[in-house]
Image (cartoon, rainbow over all chains, first blue to last red; front, side, top):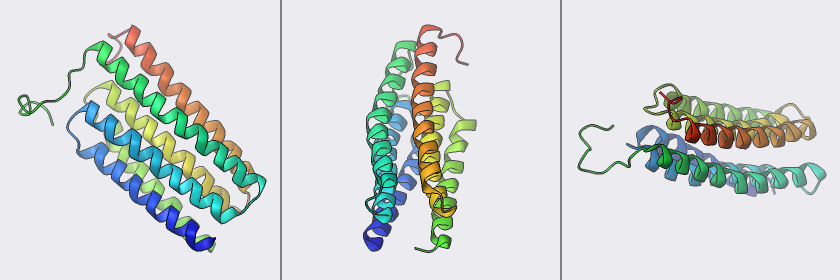
Amino acid sequence: MDIAGTVMIAVGLFFMTVTAIGLIRLPDFYTRTHAVSKTDTFGIGLVLIGLAMYEGATLVSLKIVLGLLFISIANPVAAHVLARSALQVGIMPWTRRNSAQEH
Amino acid sequence: MVSAAFVGIASAILFLSALSMWRLAVGRTIYDRLLAAGVVGTNIVGLLVVLGFVFERPDMFVDLALTYALLNFIGTVAASRYLARHPEEGA
């Protein structure tokens, strides 16, 4: 179980690195939301699964899985509410025509 | 895994959160800053669970992680819904 937990944590850390890189490099708010919400939830999910596999079958790992389920539901909902609120305010998506002003 | 590997994992998560804080400081709109705050919050949830394994008390830190995940979600949703109703507050 230790090897599988280590592999899960390593892959999760890779996805969290992709999240941080995408948050810095992408040109627009909507592209950043799209990249960050998926990879961040998946990366933190893999890290938590790896830690639960390392712990074994105890109450602590059950609570870790519970937190993982809540994050899997809550993070995409929060990203959706954020993007919808930005669209209602009037932030326009980035296109290639106005690429000279952005980024 | 020995405790040194957990300390390495915790420092890696902390480094990634520091990278996201750059977008928190330099964000063109306020929604960028809200997004970066959500990312930092989610990273801190993972960091809390790893710190539970570092300090040999995983039961307490997992409770802290669950509470902070709730607070992070509620804060992001509340701030974005407030900014949708009062668009002049976002600079």
